[in-house]
Image (cartoon, rainbow, N blue to C red):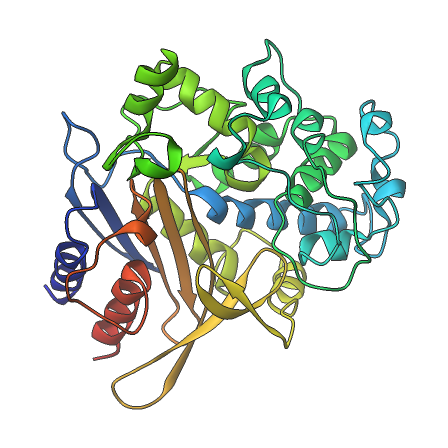
Length: 381
């Protein structure tokens, strides 16, 4: 009841700029799920509605890279050139934007100096961007080719999805398998977790539609991004997801449900989980920089595609949690894991929550963080 009240209270406080939300809490032997709102104009959000998890997808990629390091495929200290030069598309990479001397470690920690590629509505008249999302065939190197800014010296933190595309290409080269197959063989099937990677795999039937402030995308008011795309360009839902996924892939392309992602967070971060070996999990959880860096509107410590922050509990103690946020283009995602409670939380929304016109509610953090905060406090009691 306390969990449900926390979700309902914050969902109501979002005002009119919201659609649906689904939440799961997972510990060993216990699962709680709840959904509220709408998945589309014709369907309610349910706990089994597939929803894009956006950059929470990065946690699968870092786990895969650490798995390959443990397999002896390459080392964290290896340069990008040494681990990717054998790729048939390596010659297509621009050496002014892609620094072949950066290491796998620097790519994983967002400190490679390789700049982000443009992927937002501000670039809608960029012919290169339009070509990448609309061309008859697509490869990850096409998206990497959108990078316009020259690389800078590695070392400084900058959140850049370019790192993920390059690491995804590395993983495929060293295994000879598609990224979606690697996820399925190494994590999804052994852990009995349901998720799909777009655009490698088809969009699940009934996937929640993306809602956001359409003013940013050439429309007006709050609404369905796919419907806007249909009126602007005549695109179907499948075409919208295909185009979106070409800019997401290894960085933000996974679709799943909260129960599956909460279980994934547990399997990945808990010492009782089995996604990684004890050695690889230690590397992951020891990868945090001491520097506090901005992520999802908050200062957090960042590691290998995992962030660490804390919540203050009612007894005055600080609760450390790890996980990764996701969001953009009509979706919001969070996964949090607490070692103190050995508990994982997943929150998925089919709206860009940061655009919500908050009407009351928790003022300490944003909507999804406030929900997690209340869930952890309720569990602590």
